[in-house]
Image (cartoon, rainbow, N blue to C red; front, side, top):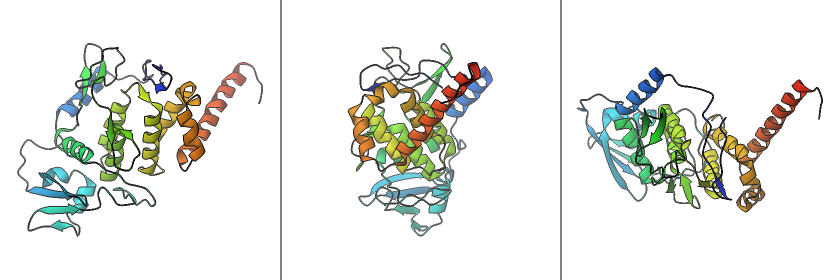
Length: 288
C-alpha cells in the first residue's frame, strides 16, 4: 500500500512511498517496449471503417484490423449497424443508452456516459498502444511518469497535463483515466484498463469532490466483479481518511447514498480495523 500526503484541506495527495512490489530492469524495459510499439503491424492495408458515433453524430475512421483488436468492435463489424457496402458502422446509442454491456457480460441499470475525447483515446490506444499523455519510463529516477507533466513541486503527478474530463450528465469533472478504464471495460481491452489504472496512480492533489464523483462513475460503469478500479478508490479513501472525514462533500455524498461504493467502503474499513486488531493480538493477545 501507499501512503498519501495532503497538499490542502480538501485534497488527496499521491503516493510518496514506493510500493513493496519491485520491478526488475528487464520488466521495466519490456513494459516500455510495449508502450513504444503499436499493437498492430507496420503495414496497415485493411479497409478503412467509418464510425458514426452518437445521436448527434461524430465521425471517426479507423482500419478494420485495428478495430478488430477489440471484441466490442469485432462484434460491431458483424452486427446490424454495419453497412458492408459503405464500410460504415453506426453506433447511435454509444453516448446515451441507459444501460451498459461489456464484451464479457451484460449489465442492467448502469448509466453509460461517453465523450468524443474518450473515444479518441480508445482509437489512439488501438493504434499506438497508449493515449495522451503517454506513460514514460524515466531511467534516471527508475520510475514512470507522464508525458509533458510539469512536475514543479516534485510530486510525480501530471502537473500541467489535464487530469479530468467533463462528461455530459456526470455533474462535474471526472478523472480522465477512470473514464478510459470504464470504456476499456466496455470494449474488452484489458491491457488498456491496466494502463489507465497505472496512470491514475501518478495523479496528485485531486479534490475530494472529483474523487467521489469519479468513484461513483466507476461503480456505475464497471461490473460488480471488478477488483481493480473499485478497490483503487476504496484504498485511496481509507488512506486519505483524515481528509475525507472532515469533508462536507463526503458527508453529503454518504447521506445521499444510492451507490454500492459506501457499503464496500464500510466493509473495507472493517477489514482494515480487523487487520490492526490481529496485529495487536499477535503482540499482546486480546479481543474487542
